[in-house]
Length: 282
Image (cartoon, rainbow, N blue to C red; front, side, top):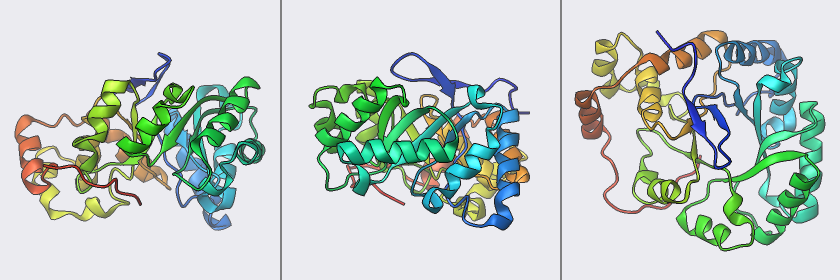
């Protein structure tokens, strides 16, 4: 059984958010699936998965509109994350993009606003936009996504850059590269990782190497893949689930306690990195 109270992750401010949240990539692309997606997010909220990640990029704002409907009447329960596109990340562009996201989300604030990945605008410009948004209460925290160690060091060297609240990167059994350098750096500097695509966009749910472990836990391979990422107890995890069955499956992964034998078996099937690799993107 999954716990009724979800484990939490502390942000640099000390504020705690649920370790297991909800992603929204590919949501909002079809009006036919709108109500199903809204219902999935609402169920996640009922189960305590009140961290919801979205972005202006997803369905050109359509995912934010799905989130708006899902959180209607429940905004104060939620911790909303959204992102600015790299091409919009000048000072003025960041502010304007955030204002558009706020309108689509039908809220007066975004809890954590991320730069989606590095673009042509200088980080100083993006930081200036974040600081302006913080000053007027449009966002509560800022962070980044798809930043490697060199990017993070560049950010931290800038005035105010060390206020970064999170770095959202891909992390799963087949993409463990951050374990070598980025994850240790992040822990040393107090920047929690937010892991996206923890089930490799569903592909790990069909991986035979996970079947034996799944059988021992009376679980699915996808749940074992998710449990592996959740084993990193200082990391937020944001799987996407577009229907209620999938939401329940993700939530139940919280109740899986992987043993040392399980973890050793996973290391044999999905070896951890032995050298630094370029940051992977999806």
